[in-house]
Amino acid sequence: MRIIPAIDIIDGKCVRLSKGDYDTKIIYNENPLEVAKSFEAHGIEYLHLVDLDGAKSSKIVNYKILEQIATQTGLKIDFGGGLKSDDDLRIAFESGANQITGGSIAVKNRAIFEKWISEYGSDKIILGADAKDEKIAVSGWLEDSDEDLIPFIKDYMKKGIEYVICTDIAKDGMLEGPSFDLYKKILDQSTIITDDKNIFKKVKLIASGGISTFDELPKLAELGCEGTIIGKAIYEGRISLKQLENYIIR
Image 1 (tube, rainbow, N blue to C red):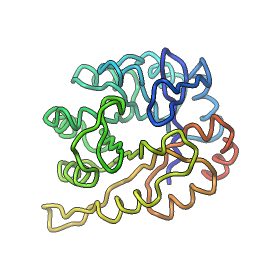
Image 2: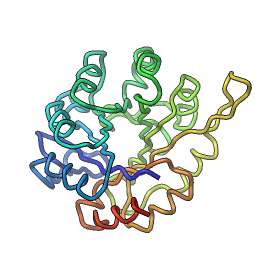
Image 3: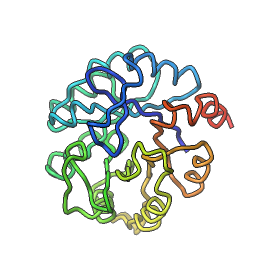
Image 4: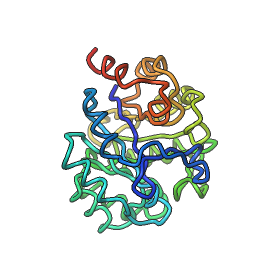
């Protein structure tokens, strides 16, 4: 299972929210590049970088920070937040993103998101399926939708999506443990049969939200999660970078 630390950006600073509420913002470091370098120094290869300003304003904002981290580290960066147009996507990839995550756009403009999957490929486009009570939430989690989580995932798998980041919003930033039951349900039910000789295709699920202790990581791996995103647990010292380094080595 891949270990993917998160850096969330507001006003160019590394922050964390609770349940996606911007009023709960805590600034952990004013230099995201410094944080990214500390991850890399401990053997971490991946980074989940979220432009929270972009998510709120519906256009990419903090691409310069993406560019800094991409040019000054070797981290493979998944970038999300505010990607709504072909131009946003172009800026993200030109600024050094290895992958992008589309959440709101996948709900509000299916045509353009499906075009991105077709043009860039399933290894470059991740579906952000963030949910509250198993309903998809959009616009930086400020809006609910009528989309049911698992049918939403399966529908996009039929369009070519392989990677899905799922955050249970009720758990995010709360340090109360991840939604094991929800992830098991997704993994059990999100298998499709492709048109190509009835081949079964399983989702590559990246768990996000609520990680609070190191012991939760092997449990997520055992469930079958392809990766896990860790945020506040690192910044609050609940999980050390040395622990993650040892896990990756093993």
